[in-house]
Structure formats: structure tokens, C-alpha cells
Image 1 (cartoon, one colour):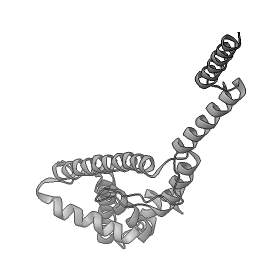
Image 2 (tube, rainbow, N blue to C red):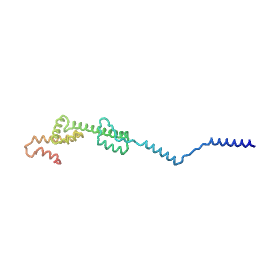
Image 3 (cartoon, rainbow, N blue to C red):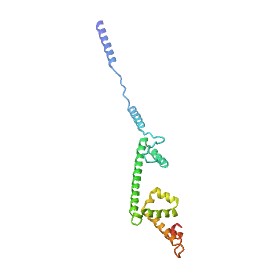
Length: 201
């Protein structure tokens, strides 16, 4: 009797020991913890993906294109509002510079067509081109202000056939008036100018 009881007790103890050894305790995360972890990861990803807006953009222009300081300041303000990175701002500035170059090239070609039109014009071109241009230039020197000359040179309109013809006719009127000075009812150079530019008085 005693031996059997001892054996059973021993077996029970051994089994209890085996059960304790093999059992593992797992703590499942609550739904709130999972949600918080996901939110933290999302916030961290969003922060790392946020564009880096520089304090000042270093914009490189193509050869032949000058960066206007006023335009650059305006561009910087807009780029910062849009939170553009350096690369994004550079790409946008490059597009604007390319457009400016194309416009300048197109205008230069237009001016070239004006020059060719003057050379072949039936009234002022041909063999007497240089002589007629001298007449127009004389009128410009007489009636044109320095500001007008600057505008014509900057825009290229000094080569426009209509502008050259206008000053050519003014030059002719000056020459004719000088030849007939002293004859009655012919008027002076100032009278001729007033007739040609009545709104300039």
C-alpha cells in the first residue's frame, strides 16, 4: 500500500512538473496599442517624406540668360509657399528660362525680317538704302530724345520699316523746309514738326 501511494504521488509530481515546463505565457497586444503603434509609424513616415524647403534657393540659369534679382525674389516667395525643394525649384526655373530664351530667339528672328524688309523696300531700300537711312537718322537725332533711342534699341523697333519710314519722311520734310526757307507760307522746321506730331505740343 505504501509503495503504490508513493509511486502515484511521484508520477503526479512529475506530470505537474512537465506541464509547468511546457506551458508558455503570451500576452496579446490590445487594439489600442496596435492602433497607437500604427499611428506612430505613419507619423514618422510622413515626417521623413516631408519636402525639405531651403532657406534660399540656388538657381542656376542657362548660358545667355541672366537672373533678374526682382524676379528671383518673387519666384522664391512663390516656391516657399508651395514648399518646393531645391530640385523642384530648379526644374521650374529651368522651364521659365527656356521659355524666355525661345521668346528672345523668336523676337530676334522677327527683327531680322524687319531689316530685310527695309533693305528691299521700294521706297527706302535698294541702291539708295544708305542714303535714305542717313536721312532717317538725321531726323531721329533732331527730334528723338535719348529715352526714345534707348527704347528703339532695346526693343529692336528701330529696325522696323514703319519707324524708319516715319523718320525718313520727317528727314525729307526737314530738308525741303531748309531748301525753301524764306519763301512765304512754307513755315519753319518747328511748324513742320507740329503738323507731323500735333499731340506732342
